[in-house]
Amino acid sequence: MNQGLIITIDGPSGVGKGTVAKSVAKELALAYLDTGAMYRAVALQVKRNPINIDNDTELLSLLNNTEIGIVNNQDNVLVITLNNEDITDKIRSPEISRISSDVATKRLVRKKLVELQREIGLNGNIVVEGRDMGTYVFPEATFKFYLDATLEERALRRRKQLMENNINIDLDNMTKEIELRDKQDKGRLESPLHPAPNAVIIDTTNLNADEVTNRIITEVKVSK
Image (tube, rainbow, N blue to C red; front, side, top):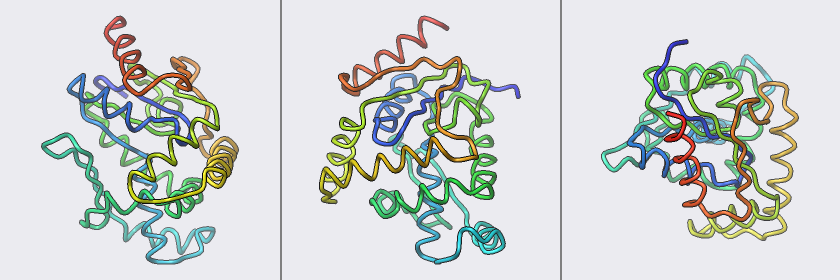
């Protein structure tokens, strides 16, 4: 697949992919795509229209009535829509995270969303973040990065993010949720979470978002 500049940033839950990816995109004047938000959009659709996600017929029917939109507005802020409704602020709760981790294991869901992700990235000049961007969705990406951090640090970061959005959760519960998500992400049959063979792996445990952003930008500029 011929493509322009694509930077992939993968990693587990709570590692700070979103913050870093947005900063990298802004600094390099590129578009930004949060693929995790797409799975969260499907999760919200499932919450609103309860189905047995293990039943392919029910799941396919739901997906056929699910239109997801991803746009960067004039301030380069990502806006996510579900059937033309802005759901950007409705998909960050722990409940949606749990549903999202379940729907992300389903082949039909991944097929639909991967097709959309590749369509969005077709022209390049984009930073995409997720869990299988460099390994599966964009295997020929120009630059690939994989962010990691300790479970404890990721739980602290995710809890802080939720509390900033007025969602309170106990740190122990947050840690358990992320640990469970790790097992699901790494153990699923469809595109399990792991670094691409040629990815630059960055341990962000003792780094802040600006330091990680600068590391990625330096790698990109040196290699161009």
